[in-house]
Image (cartoon, rainbow, N blue to C red):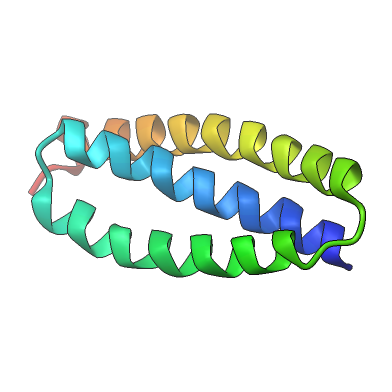
Length: 92
C-alpha cells in the first residue's frame, strides 16, 4: 500500500508543481499562491510516507515513475485548458 501512496503522492506533488510553474510564468499570482498551499500539504504527506518506507529502492522507483507521469500530465492538462480558455468560441 505504501508504494501506491508514494506513487500517487509523487504524481500529485509534481503535477501541481508543473501547473504552478506555468501559472507563475503567466504571472497568475492568485492561482500560484493558492496552489502553493496544496503543494505544501501534498509534499509533507508524501515525504512522511517515503521516509517511513522499509524498502528504499522500490519506493524510489515508484516515486520516480509518479514524478515522470505527473510532469507530463501537468503539461498536457495546462495546454488543453489554456487552449479551451483562449478559444474565441468560449470567450465571454
